[in-house]
Image (cartoon, rainbow, N blue to C red; front, side, top):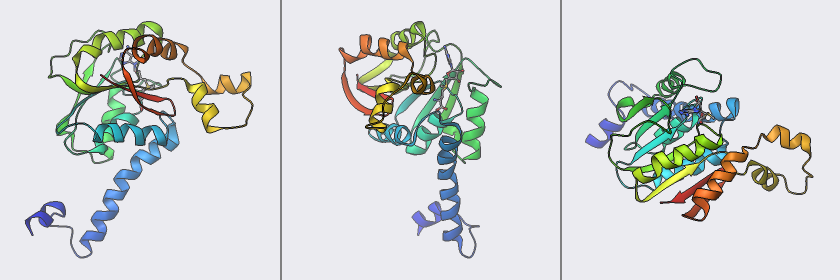
Length: 225
Ligand SMILES: C[S@@+](CC[C@H](N)C(=O)[O-])C[C@H]1O[C@@H](n2cnc3c(N)ncnc32)[C@H](O)[C@@H]1O
């Protein structure tokens, strides 16, 4: 009884379970809506990200580099209730590439419990982390050479042994070819794919040989630290 009153609080009224179910579904739909509208990450990448978060120990500490539209932040927060997420972004508000305030809004709109969520406003390759060791870092911020290199150097040593470091926008051309077998890739298509050569280069140089790759979904790649 107690368990049920916690899950479905008083006030749900007649037909309460049905109402609550559709509220929960609406909240989950926010993520789908965001992915479809903005395409910052794909559905397969969101699923992979959630799978990785679900594989972490209890009360995991996750860092999300690059708020963007809030898609990765929402996917991580919705993956499990005990996750503690910190998002880092150099933009506080109103940027076409995304910002911390956009992520806050998205999480609030989706009904996320904000008590396990925090933000750091700053350059992710330079901020000083004062929290406990981290279970997982998701890197989707500055995609240029110094940015990707800086993120790896600034965060890698703060991840627990057996933790995970994840990168977005890795080998986007390969991901496109896998999704479109038999279709000839043209310079025009490559332009539309917008590959990030420095993500490919730096991740290959600093991660591929040093760590075990544990997952690749579209352009999301994860390593065991
Ligand atoms: C591609 S978006 C992230 C998309 C986000 N993961 C999502 O799913 O919606 C990149 C974000 O990184 C931020 N950014 C770029 N360079 C940064 C840096 N050096 N430090 C912190 N944030 C940075 C941008 O302001 C932008 O919000």
